[in-house]
Length: 297
Image (cartoon, rainbow, N blue to C red):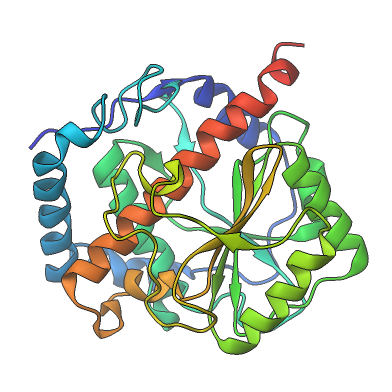
């Protein structure tokens, strides 16, 4: 089957901005060269191949659910907003003061990041960086306005953020970005809920099954049910001026991205990969809308 994502033009500008911004490398690499070499031999696990095939079959069966092919450019429902032929997708994770920021990432913890990035590449046609990146929260302001990451991912077994970092995160989301939080434990759930309150942008609320973030480009029939209920059964978020600025999954989405998929059934793994693409699709399209004027200056 040919790839069904045809990609975007303003996104090219956005992601090009990423490569122009210099920032310090993390103290510890997310994945070592040795880990990369070992993983290359096992990039296409049997499970990932099965999930990929299932995803394609499900999309074929649900083409009437969207007015546009998944990932096609234009203004139709489910489309990506323009194209990006030479861009490189970057999965940026946040380093924080709690534990487990690297949980599930890299060969030692299950390759959740690399598996998702490879799946994203296969399903979208995007070029992707081989590994995810991890950066301190304090580095977010180094991106010029209009050229910051559309989303940043945060996980762990608990999370600790200073008042200064809260202000940085608040400004980041107000300026168009989105926090994609993924609970790795009950402690993470309780600590992240406190962080959400400290943002002072409104309460966490349930994201309904009919919300665009769960319907485009993939129509998730059962919404965003959690894999492991560390803090509830459904995804929640914070909306600011009509846009989700926080997407919180209280059930460890990345567990289903690991090499062994944490023992989940294939339909749960499939949903988890597709939900990840939906979240990224939403963050890209909303960021471009929110920052279009800034990039025209």
